[in-house]
Image (cartoon, one colour):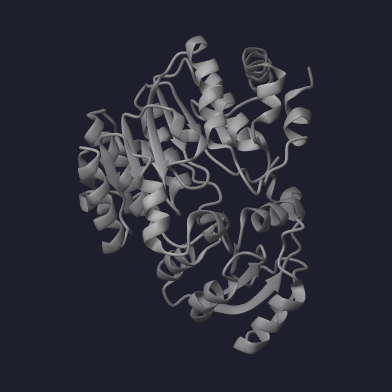
Length: 380
């Protein structure tokens, strides 16, 4: 049997078509052999990572055993399966892989997509926890994570992204995501009235109770240094615990780290893995009138003109960083658009202490920056 990482590396990350019945068939093979902790399911366009980690952190700090499954990772796959305060170890992943592969058999294991296989792997890793915080990858209704019964569904802000898979309207995107709910459902801060109406309609059809995030915690959350969309997402996590009647201590926010989510890597460097217009809107709101040097690159299927238009008020100049993917936007196209906006651009070379930087555009962008600068910032 191949080792976990070599087996995973052999699986393609992207598929033109997915057999949506396959993950249910595989889960039915696995389910009798693992425990099923209480599960909180997150779907949405933005904010799943920070909301999910805030929720998992507060649960863990309250004394519960908790696993948080997220995607994609920034530097190492281990980031995707966080358990009781730490990224999963190589040894834990390998043991889970050996068990999962044996239970599913080679034919089923090989047929599963990268995300399907790792979702089931996460369920094996977290089977002895009290809680699993499970983030959908793409969509909701047909997402691999939707095989699990939920205690609560959380709908983070929904906007345009992955239109080729989810549809070209907010109605289509939101419907696909929110159709994943089973019962109690929490709508996060930042969702539009259109999304609220769709959530109300679907929850009524499913006889599910719809809750709204309580913003009474905002001022307390901000005392711990969280601002803008991060404060909103933490408020959603806290409201979820109130709905679930789980005790917590907000002082635990003192040790909460949301790496890659408007994260201060250094006094003059902020990194953010956002990559769509909705995330750009949140960042512009958080920056206010502040000007930054934007270290940027993105994928060719992203709405970079709209993203850059939203951030234009905050951009002093742009430094383009290479990213390691065939899906990267052509540098010439990016340079031409920046030139048409009147924004000065150049190739990223080094950080200068007297400038303030925002590293943004995709997980690949942040990963590339961290790999180029990891010795200085001691990330490993």
